[in-house]
Every structure is written in C-alpha cells, then in structure tokens.
Image 1 (spheres, rainbow, N blue to C red):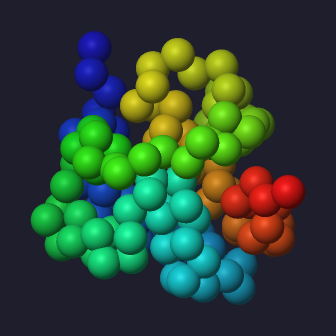
Image 2: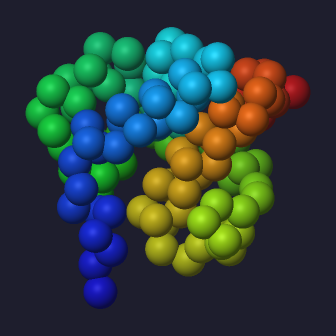
Amino acid sequence: MTERIFNMPFAKVYPLYLNKAEKKGRTKAEVDQIITWLTGFSHEQLLEELQKKTDFATFFANAPQINPAAHLIKGVVCGVRVEDIEDPLMQKIRYLDKLIDELAKGKAMAKILRSS
C-alpha cells in the first residue's frame, strides 16, 4: 500500500510548514534551513523542487544526501515514534515533520539541527 503523502506535492505541504512555524514567531529562513539540513538540497535546489511541484517520494529520492545526523531525530509525530518507522521514505517525511514541530515549539536551531 502506497501512502497518500508519498504522491502529494511537497509544494502543497511546504506552506503548512511555514504557517506552523510563523504562527509561533519563527521564520521562512529557519524552515528552509531545516529542510536543506535534512535533505542536502541547496536553497536554490529547494526552490526548484517547489516550483516543479515534486511529490514527496521524488523530493526525497532527489535529495543529494540525507543528513548523517538524521538518525539522532527521536520522538513522536502523529502518535508514532519516528525512530521506529520501518518505511525509509515515511521515516524521512516524519523526520521533517518532527523538526518543524521542534521549531514551532521554540527549540534552538542548534538543537534542532543536532549540532554538538
């Protein structure tokens, strides 16, 4: 069974990420920084993916490199522990959801980006 989100355009969910962050006083630049940190896309590449209306499956398939520290992202999103998700694509999507949640909750960028 293919998850519906896999075929959803990333550009359709991106404004929801922005809205969630901006409602809590965070910025578009911070949202973009999180996405580029996780995926390895440059800012320009991210904008291209948004313009192409790439679906989530293709977005993550095109990602230059998932950040090696992504495995440090732990916690619950939508009632599911992100570290326990078996489907690699769903796990990457939930990693991103978790990072945006942390941003909206006021966590410092260094902690969100798993900097030591």
